[in-house]
Amino acid sequence: MNKSRQLGQTDLYLSPLGLGTWQYSTKNSSGTSETFIGEVTQRLQREEALATNPFIASKWFPLARSASSITKTIDDRLEYLQIPTIDLYQIHQPTSRSSLRKQIEAMVSLAEQHKVKQIGVSNFSAKQMVKAHHLLQEYGMTLASNQVKYNLLHRSPEKNGTLEAAKELGITIIAYSPLQQGLLTGRFHEQPESLSKVSRFRKLQSNLTTKTLQRTEPLYQELKRLSLNYGMTISQISLNWLINAQGDTVLAIPGASKIQQAQDNVEALNFDLSNSDIERLNRISAGL
Ligand SMILES: NC(=O)c1ccc[n+]([C@@H]2O[C@H](COP(=O)([O-])OP(=O)(O)OC[C@H]3O[C@@H](n4cnc5c(N)ncnc54)[C@H](OP(=O)(O)O)[C@@H]3O)[C@@H](O)[C@H]2O)c1
Figure: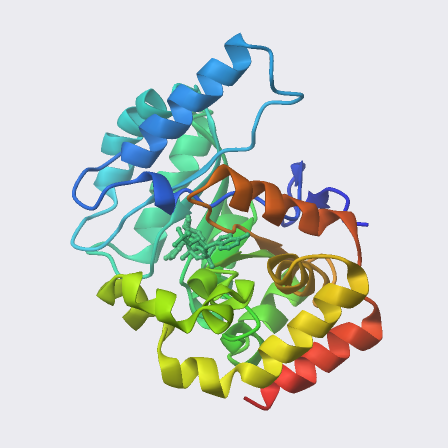
């Protein structure tokens, strides 16, 4: 079963499945999902409904910004989230006005002030990720994680060296879009007409087209077969593959716009696909 996993080489242990929070933001308003998460966790704490404090991760957006904004904007983040320390703070992507060294120095200064606990990156290539890790080592830290797109229909991290380097250096891979934005739940294969309700942006991002449904039919059929065998949903099979196919290296953060989806997804922690079923899924998805 899927017990807590170490985040990189840090002293933090967390569930292999988290909750993506993109779904709680609006397009043009900065801090919306952080404010939502802050309010919800405060309310749950007041109601004594939380067994433990939730592990909170957030990101700094580097595009067209320099490293000085890391220190300038952190207090806003903490205020939105209503917490004194962010567990994991990530550089959202590799393009910034400042060098990576300057960005890492600013991130380390936040750790020294106990405003963040651990440092991660997102959308970094293997080479950029290794560089970030080595820079952090100069300051006595390690890179906790790299958040990248990874799922049964998007296995680039296995091919571009990211996963291999992460395993070698003990860096956690946080898989975003783990359900390929709904494609790996089976719902579009079951109701192709529902594709028409999906936004153009999402269709583009995840290649949500009728052609894709046809191409991925063999995988859908295998997921359906496994779903019947294990008595689990297709989403749960897809997520279980992701958190088990690479040992303890991968954590996933499925998004959910409905409570029932989050409840469905979290159940993926309660079983293990067999090695032979993982291998079969590997083979079928590689052949698409
Ligand atoms: N670092 C980055 O650059 C980056 C980029 C993208 C995403 N992310 C993060 O990754 C998180 C997850 O990625 P994502 O939202 O792109 O994709 P995802 O998790 O693959 O898909 C989420 C969507 O799939 C549907 N869904 C989820 N669970 C379901 C279930 N059990 N049954 C049926 N449908 C279900 C929902 O669609 P409906 O809402 O239509 O029902 C949901 O909004 C985001 O929330 C965000 O935090 C990070």
